[in-house]
Image 1: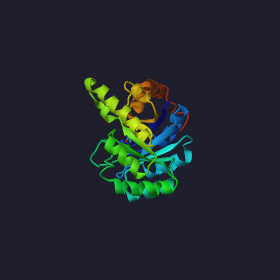
Image 2: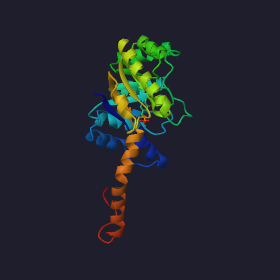
Image 3: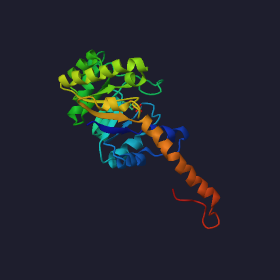
Length: 249
Ligand code: PXP
């Protein structure tokens, strides 16, 4: 059975929209763990658009499951990873102008560079996973880098129109089998939702799914009524005369 890594970048996105302190991805990682997350995933981007260095440091100290750090293959990020020591690094492609990670990494084209970074991280004791599309050429290149894990990009499947979805699922199934035959362990993620996750979770040999956006969207959906109720109660029953007006969270 596949385990669940919860990607909490989307919590940080909301915080950064206001440059304030809430919602805090660190406290919400704890809630995700209480809800049964098998791991917490964060992407520390070069432009720090959502997750901040402080978040990663605090998460390292507080996450009790598994901390998976997504990062670009850069010197700066290798230095962060070797200092923070996450339980896994997932190397992802990164472009400043993208809204989110748009495709798998072209490991075949960057084999030497990715191999060197993989070796440095693994020599310092951090398991490395490479985020790639389910293409034979990429999977073979991943195996040559010396990494032990890959994360298959499920965006093609998630975004496919109904008539193309079966073929995209078949690519993921074949990619998983091929990667495992090459000695790689397989995770997957990107764009998975409550509607499309089951077929991916059922793939033989799939170990972990990293899921973020849809879970945060669902949290808003299931939590909004209660949040409004709490605010309304404060407005209808103010206690300004009894205290300073400052209420605990
Ligand atoms: N895996 C990787 C490598 C990602 O970059 C992302 C997006 O941050 C995810 C999984 C999670 O994707 P989503 O937020 O669409 O569930």
